[in-house]
Length: 174
Image (cartoon, rainbow, N blue to C red; front, side, top):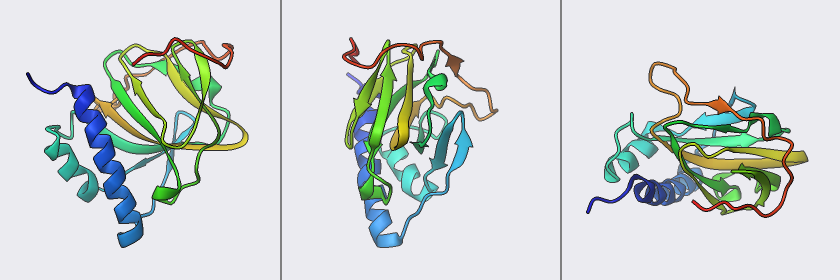
């Protein structure tokens, strides 16, 4: 039986984290972020991600790999994707970035605190988002299949009005 996309994304995420941490130390890899829907977003070098994509059987059009950062209140950016599944890992000092501080993930129906190393598997059509309290910061490695932004610039992004929901235990199950 072929390995599922979710399983391949999980294994690819681990490989990206290992290779990126090595590149930060050995090659001086740094990240240049741009603004995107209230997040800071950064693509990783093709020399790092392309071998991993190929190893796990993904083409560039099937898997997007990037780092995103949240440094301000982004509760208004809760959204779903109709066709995109995501694998998100909270990252920090191993990649030369600050460890998570006062960060939260929205999953299904509420905000949950997140910490370094937390992994979120976000299926298609599940409401999700990320935010921080004032002074907080959160960086994540995101793998999306298929990419939420097509090669033609079309976005798979549907805003959701869930920002008023409370923080605490959720029924989230990937």
